[in-house]
Image 1 (cartoon, rainbow, N blue to C red):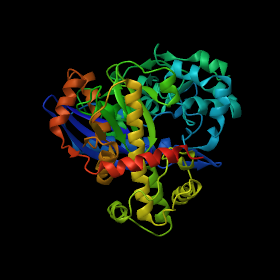
Image 2: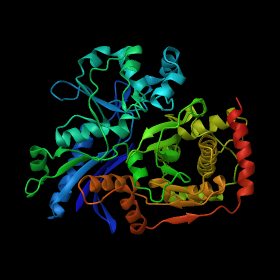
Image 3: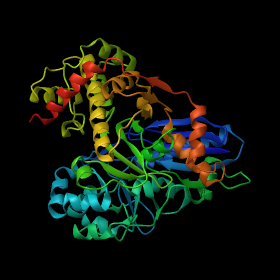
Image 4: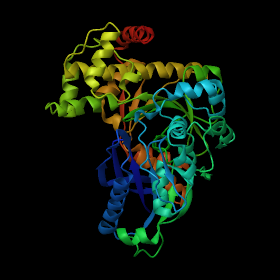
Length: 494
């Protein structure tokens, strides 16, 4: 059977064709396109109508290229961002981008009204300034009339699934990224919103991953050339949060293994059955997000290759057009552990000039300034590996048992220098792949929903034999151990 995964990331989107069965998976990229924010009146938004046009182009590629019937389509995207619709189902405004500055300092204001302990106990989510809760709080303070006018709130993947199927629902894994979803009861935390003066009339039904939402709308099918099939194309809600799909598409996960979904962000965690709550998890700022097949992704968000992507963008604007291979070579030639940063420092969330932000941070921390691109890239990658180790050790503390192999999936699994640094820095075996875990997890859930696969476990076994994996082993961990001690001191330095 043929399936399409629409995988929209924070910097690019793809439409991927997947063929799934118990004997293995095949994957083909049909259409790739950039995902660039729009600046409107000084604020960042998502250009969702352009993205919708690109999605339809990808569907049309399938219709043109293949005569076999398409079984289903599923959409996954990043978390936390949302679309507000009127009674007719039309967008009231362009959705805001989570890196927009409208939530600056609002998290502290919310926590003065509702305690962090209360928030964590109810929602299980770590406090991040761009969570949907703080975005809605900003909306209620600055444009409450817009919220009152809204008939429906859909998370970003749900808006695209609505455009495909006509059904307005929110899928569970993305709902859990909002910080107003009750993690134990699996329902909207409407009382929490009311205490913050945020209306909740626009909240809609929450459905589990694997829900068949309906058939592809006839007008869309005709526009993209999929109206000649003898069987209808189904729209399936996969794990619509891209990390939920990525974890679903990671083979050989168990309670003793760590996953890192590596891309613009690094999501570092374990797959659990129940949420991990309590003061210790709250103080360490871990999060419990919904997973596929009744699982919880107990993890921490770590700033990922955004650091490198932004450096590369700034250098290109300055006329220095480094490709990734050149940057890796320069990083390898640079002295190790000269400068370290906390990847999650607020300095790096959305600076106008990432290299300057990194140098300013190093200066503030009393470290040598990384002056050239090689030194800056090495600083970023070494710091990421050391932050991974810190998170893994915190996971062990919270779970009460040791963790072994680290499975890295996503685009960052192709970054061999980072994977090597991760094995060394974390003193653990690292296995990388599949690169396209998100699209594969998306397709796997569609295959289970349509009866092609019996369950997630069978799909993961098939993944293991379908795609090549690479192993990294720690060799020089003593030097990394000293760097880790220095890293921890640096984090506590004012």
